[in-house]
Image (cartoon, rainbow, N blue to C red; front, top):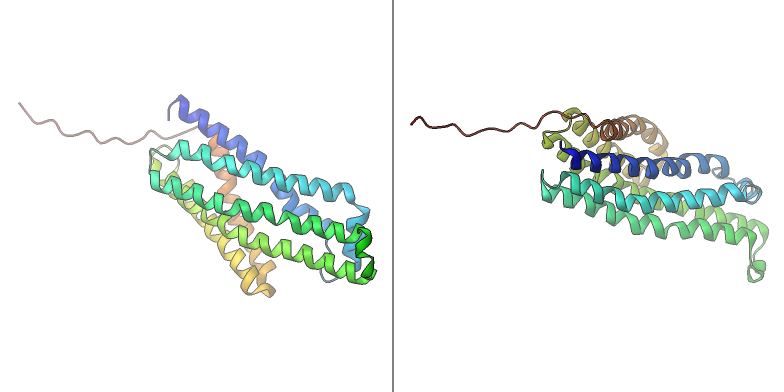
Amino acid sequence: MDHEQKRLARLAGLLYVVMGLPGAFFLQVVPRLLVVRGDAAATAEHMLSSEPLFRIGLAAELVSNLVFILTPLVLYQLFKPVDGRKAALMVIFVLVSIPISLVIVVFETAAYTVLTGPDYLSVFTSGQREALALLLVGLHSRALDIAAIFWGLWLVPLGLLVYESGFAPRVIGGLLVIAGAAYVLAAFTALLVPQYGSVVANLAAFPEGLGEISFVIWLFAGRTRAMTVTSPAVAPS
């Protein structure tokens, strides 16, 4: 790996962290503090009493998704010499997920609007508004499961690129492929067999974290194996 490759790797690592930290905040922290499953009144109370947290969560979601656009573009430059098609596929999977992730922010903002309510919503009772808000929050969560399919799919070509690169540890490539499969499995379970969604998501969290964290550590460390180059045999004169 030359100086330019190391620069791209560290830039990608920085973007990954800037994407991942707010992503973990809005995916894991905010829902646990604001949403009470099956209890519209309690969810509404939490959202109304924690407006700063709600708005910080929205900002974190937007920042994470916007940085997610840049991350695969830098990785594309790093791994394009390895296999241009796999590198392009990696970018395509991410770019497909971005519109889904950005549009569904509307569900959360709509839920808060319903609760704080303009005058024309006065035709609904408070209980109806709370139920509608919980419905919108639930739709946001289900749409995130759809986006998560692509969060997993992009890791598969990335993992294959790492494995084939010759300048990165192959084990990290394998871990990324497993992480991608775990994301996809957890997403499909949440969508198709929701009663098992939380169980599978908890089990999938370990391979997901192991693959992505090990990859980020490698990006920052810049330690690489020498690329294997096979020299042609020289015919005797």
